[in-house]
Image (cartoon, rainbow, N blue to C red; front, side):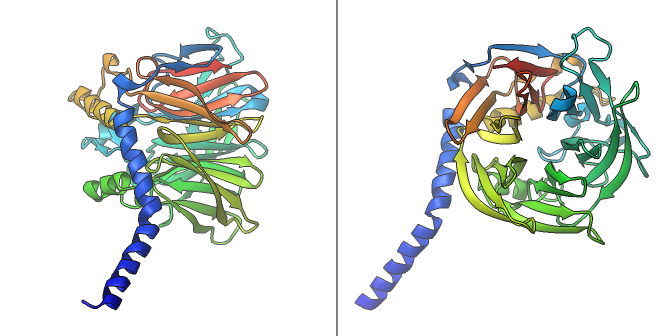
Length: 394
């Protein structure tokens, strides 16, 4: 081999190494977390001034929760049927008629716990066709009372829109539109710009129901199959386009008027994007976190709240255990409702960076959302497979 050929191959190797180094470094960090964050090694951290495990045996498996500060209430997205139907974690119970539907709840955290009005289910009406409701991410445009829901319907995942009426004795949400689109394959989380325009994350390209091993490879190899889609319902027909590709794209929130934050669960990071006038996104920064982030929210003071999973293998173990609890008639007994997967909740500001709020492998488990009413200093944490929610103050 000539000197020229040797140098050429060396140059190609150097270029390939430089090109793949950020990816390899990111995968190394994610793999280190699997070892470092074993439940027995996790520190117990609690910086809350007060906290309480509430709504036990009333709501469970709540994937998302959002604060409507003007109304002093939270909207909770919960699904007892997640034990039998979870398209992200690969749970597909064959007896579909036995799978219970999920439920949205109004939780008025400013009322006493024993008040009859403190917790109320939202009645969903005018849903077309077969009613199948397995909610993940929820969003609310208060100006128009528009409620957006990522619904993992048994017949295929979609985004459902409702008009929410909070004035009646019992809250009612009237279905107005269903969005099914090839670019909304695996909808997970939504952030609305107004009643006609929003961003929705797709956590994977390869769906667990289509190719389980491929979906797992996409997750653990950190492949950028997840996306952020921009949806404009004012266009005719509605315009949907991919504006970012993110490994395991999960939670999404507006950090401010011009910045969108997206959780990448596979990469253990939050990606920041500049929002352009046409809805496109341009990456502007990265926040590394010591766990796999799930959902995101921004409180009234502009603080980014991040909840997630320190140790995915333990979460997988919990999912398998929950499946083993399912009886022949599709019922999961109450003794199986407690989560055993650890929790990590942090907050981030540009001034102070990342600060841990709550880390536990013994108390409240499988946290996936943290949200806060900054005016009243009341926050909530929801758990993907937990019984009840955590209510806290700083």
